[in-house]
Length: 388
Image 1 (cartoon, helix red, strand yellow):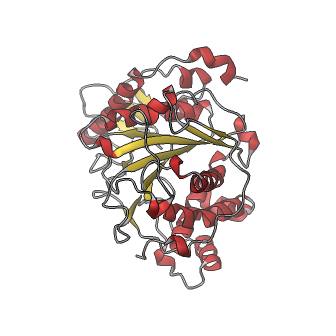
Image 2: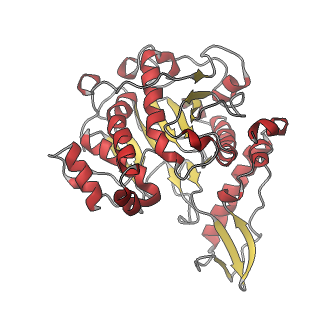
């Protein structure tokens, strides 16, 4: 494990198009500002180690293309973040903001503090195969803007997420962000295979002396790290994300998680001090139904759907892919709980038996989502805008 890259060792971020839209201002009383934190939230004096804010505080960031599919998820995630923030220890989670890669403002910018940039793929405003390919470029533009205007940064720890997360409890910082010996955090995904020959080849191109075993099986989300860490890893993350998209052989082999490998190579090439953990120790995420317990996680990640079958018939289902209509994002519906109480003889669609633990975990996730949904206003009057 290497040490955190210092500002002196990090190459300047590549020049890029300036951000087009920024909400909210650091001082203000808008609904979006209220969503991001408790009233006015102080910003850093400088990017990185010169931030000057408490070293155990966290600014949460997440990326989105503003589609109804992602806005359904984003509104729930922010709502559950606010519920977690109200718990003991939640005061350390000082702010949440969204990095929107989209050509135009969307319908939830008044509700969620948002930094908008033009995407690499403008067609994703309507529909595209892989909007995640724009993520690294969008984060790089946020980093560039934040370095120029450090008040955008609300804490020395930055937590990068995706929209399909549900907060369970506050995430504690791993220690003082100003102590370089304290590692950041990432999550070990068991479906990421860093020894893939394509990954090794890209690593050696960027860092000939790097050992392939140093590549983590993580991705850019969830990652808790310092500004310097994101600044160090992002140029390679962005470059390789675009490389993969233009090389069909690599794209085909690495599949839907291909952009995650680009981040991992950026981490390894810069020898960043980020601790990569899976269960049961990680404080980051649990992924039901793959994971049957919450373990020590602060969030659920619902990347997979769940379909209950009993006697060959569907008796319950939940999948984020069911919620893609504009109305789902603007008037978020309450979600049906799995059948109660647990009973034997129910299986997932892939044949996995529904155990009491898995059932309780899925029910807990849906309950938390519904608690967040109950706090969301109906903004369906914006439906015409969403469908344009």
